[in-house]
Length: 389
Image (cartoon, rainbow, N blue to C red):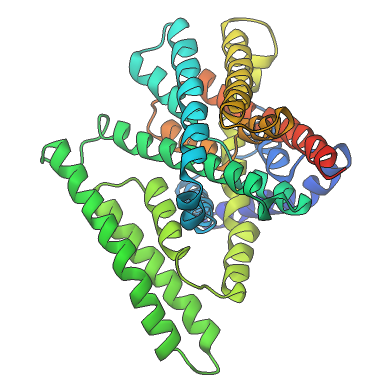
């Protein structure tokens, strides 16, 4: 007899085994790890072969995977770098935010959706994926130059803007306070400001002065975990959505010196267990029947995919030229900004759980992530190779 606990373990086993074996096969045709997990989830999920169903435990693992991804994205944010290059970064990120937002908003509105849903898709168009771009910038050595710093900073600002806009818009769906929104957001802002000031000092005091023993790394790891969970709970109780709260915690800890050993353990824990479940669950939300025949759903998917690629690359190239970058450098920024991964999928995950988007729009955005994580790195890698030559 299969109990609920046994069923959960079986589902986890299938997901983790699939995430271990199948991505290795997909590498031969240059399909990234994340993309392969989404495809596997789509095939095995309710809209595909219907072999797997989730439950609350599996969904919670997916939530932890999303939280981990946003925490690591925040941890990789270099606020000092953004400040030093603020003028070019503001110009480039500004255009790369406004133009895609307008594209996403009006494409969805054209197909008859409400202004609120259209706004959410516009917010999703704003985001990019700094995590996906970093390996290419590091490999080429560009990340140590101003150009790499400008590209990365601009993408990070777009991600932060997307998360903030999402958090504000969710207040319209699920009110978490009886206070006026202006006062409520002021409280959130002050709380985050104080956390940015005090948490690094507390961290440095306890970790550097108290945790000096043979179990230093273990104590530091436990302290970071306690700090992350408690801060996440505090911000969530204030009403900040976990997707934004996790990112903020990562940015706060990016200001302190966390040992490479601790970062490695976090990365191993997340990508070894929670992250594969998150991407697999996202794949399960993708309706494959929309691709079987041409219709309204296919038209929406095609329009959104083309609209995002054109708006992101076009606005990135235009912004680069206005910032006095060369045509090739501007193309690098445009190519890096079309990749939609971590932030985009986290936003879709939240919106789908709240029933804010229908299956067509959910499938559209997931498909966009699959396409952009496939073609984006190819274009980016080609341009970077030319840059090095």
